[in-house]
Structures are given as structure tokens and as C-alpha cells.
Length: 156
Image (cartoon, rainbow, N blue to C red; front, top):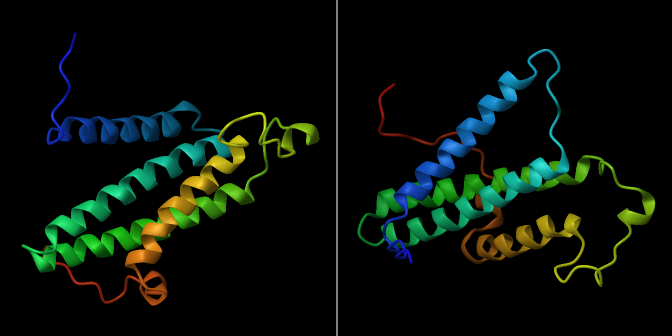
């Protein structure tokens, strides 16, 4: 029997997730350099799940960092907003792609077949759930503000 990983020991999991994204990026660029494959709905659905998980993480980090370190908390809140903008764009791209290998009969909505509904709607359910956090903590003007004017303390 293995012991559970302590809650505070998430860094190895974050490193593994980062390594997985790096590996996936490398495999996309080296697999078929002559004819790269465009993204498909399954690919974007998995990326959307990754981004919404990051979105929840940034939300929690901003909340816990803001009281003791207000400036850092504001930057994390800005990152949270920008991540939501990326998530929303990814969701929109998903719906603009054609459904692959799906006949007209399979494309019909049959929620009785799966308890969570048709697979194409899982991205929408996830997106709506993440949207509740955004609407609770972010104004529409914040969501539409461009990144211009953002200052950083790093020298380049």
C-alpha cells in the first residue's frame, strides 16, 4: 500500500505536467515536418481541460497571495484573466473545427447514452463552470483590456 502524497507536495506534479506539454510540443514539430497535421477537436478538448485546470490554480494562487503581497497578487490576477482569454479562444476554436469521423447519426445529441452528455458538450460544460469563477471575480472591461501598458520588473 502506498502513502498519499501530501497536499503541499504538488510541485512534482506541476513539473510532470510541464514536461508532458513540452514533450507533446516536440512530438508535433518533429513527427511530420513536411506535412504538419492541424489541430483536431480531441486535441483542443484536452488542451482546454489543461487550461481550465491552470485557470483554477491561478485563481487560488491569486487569492492566497494577494493579502500578504498585494502587488504579486495583482499580477497573478492579471495572469488569471489572460489565461481565461486564452481558454475562451481555445473553446471558440474547438467549435469552428469540423467533427472528424462523425456521421450525422452520431452527431445528434443523445444525452441518455452517456451520463455526462455527448462528448462534444464536455468542453462546454467545463467552460461554463470555469466561466462562473470569471464572472464572480472579473469585470467585462477587465476581460477586454489588452495587455498594452503592462509593466514588469524584469530587465530584458
